[in-house]
Image 1 (tube, one colour):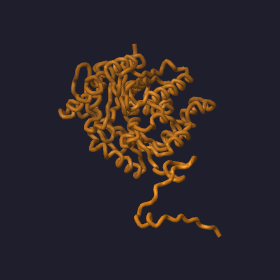
Image 2: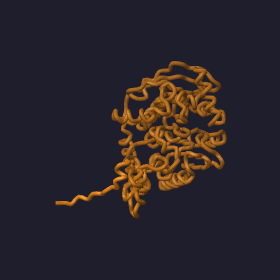
Image 3: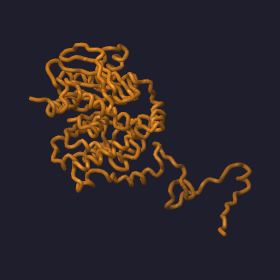
Image 4: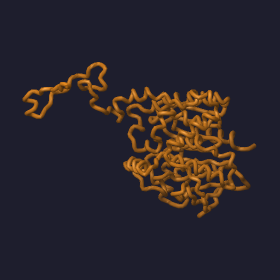
Length: 396
């Protein structure tokens, strides 16, 4: 029969309800302070006390360098299939059923409001800009950011002509992040067809608040779905819809985005063969380097739009982007961007350069950290990106 060990507390401690202070943690204990046990269980930045141990376990076994023996195409199929599995959002082959509900002329292009089925559950209003003249044209899927601003989504990238209130909000947004320019309109004036669609929670699909994001994500999990997976699936669908339009050259479609839109840009390039080139501004980092106290991602809420549960057990963030290799990709980050520490950006860029180099496509990957700039996609950056797109997608 086993003996039980009892700890006797002093009578005064029992009577007063005050327990004696815990002893200092002994060497090798799981946490501190505490007599050999973990207490407290969370540290600054909402990280668990064992966060460093978890990070040490992340060796990203599905990353390309571990599978050269498979060959590139087999690895790419394997890696994409794993990402698809963890989206928790099934493939959707619903008819797009595109309907033009408004068209207005503008200098050098036409601006349209269109309806289409972004999934079998959601019919949405989108904005489409089409250059004047004979097509088919090169095209851009313009992917909006997060910014904790939900009254506008697609309007952050294409100037709305149909709503004065949204136009005022959009102009202020463009002034803050884009040197007062609308990225989609600039690209249309240069001869690109441009499509912008609201993500769930923004613009026409609004009603979301910053505090409500976690509940929305949790409820989608309870419904057997995923907020981040839904956004990824909808972006893949939007790229396929754009490729289906008679005005668009399906072989010359780019994904372009800033901030969360930048994340969405390289993600859709990894998941969709419709994307021929990518411009991602201000969203790239290594996962280990991102998961540090004080990082914005640790606050939760908006992180749920980028969180595929379990994916980190297989692939790092740049490993996912690498599925798009060897297609052309440009990544910009600001040296002073508070959301992405320079160490994480540099680590991610190095991983990606190695992947494109293995495909003998170093010239198709462009990475740059802009000195002195923060979380912005200003005119100077835009001009370099537009020239790069012209190089890869414009004939002649």
